[in-house]
Length: 145
Length: 174
Image (cartoon, rainbow over all chains, first blue to last red; front, side, top):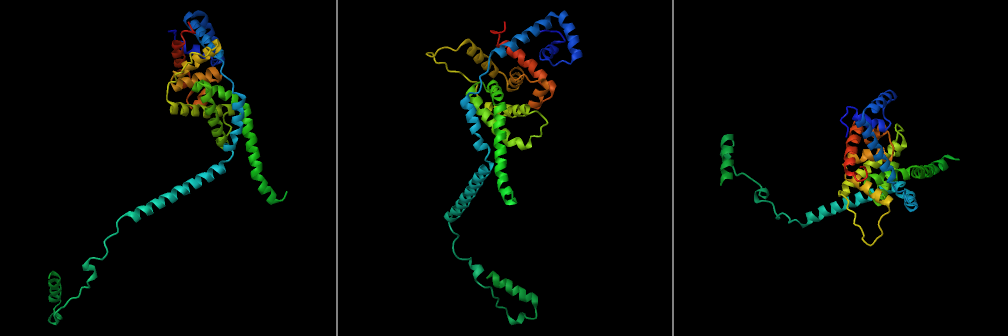
């Protein structure tokens, strides 16, 4: 690796990414900098190595499979319909599951508490008719018994 | 053609247009995208799967394609994302089991195996910039667009990726 301040520019120069003006000045620098010249040579050999590692081509069979895969790609309506039915089935299962769970839980004991059934009537002395406070006191005493 | 015939024919015409567009996309770009996929995932079998998912995704995203980038850049962006997803799902450093009885690879195959294998040892970010630059020949601007990063990030990632590769490919780069 070169320690020259132009080291990053070596990569851009190698990749053809330096603007024309910068490229010219860098080429002048290259002639005077063995470190950058070595770095450039290494980059070129690396790129040649990648070019030599020829990547495979897509086989004709794979090509055909790709063309045939359009059946799935071109039927979004079919996909939406199937998704709708899947969601509906899931909702039905949920409702059935909830109903079964409710049906299996024990019922509350029959009958209301006695205090709900028994009408409350107050036997109040007629003598309290003119005295509301006594009237209320009698009701309270009746409830306490 | 009466309106009812037009209305009933329109979906079928749309389907035919969609189908034609899909086939054209595949014919034009499948090979190139396949090679990019191989460089990213390391082998042809996985690359085929990534390619299929890429074209399916691209086709469904096609109505939203505004043409601000080239089709090639757009497809590459989708493929890089699919490959990254694939690698995360796979989540292994691949080991190749060699059959001792099988004939050895040719020198060319051996080189390809070594180069692709070395690429797989890089981080995803470094692997992507190397694949897009060295195998696809993309410019820094195009790579930045594909990866959704600034150009400066592309430059620095390339610089570091190449330093790493030089170390790991010492046998080929004395």
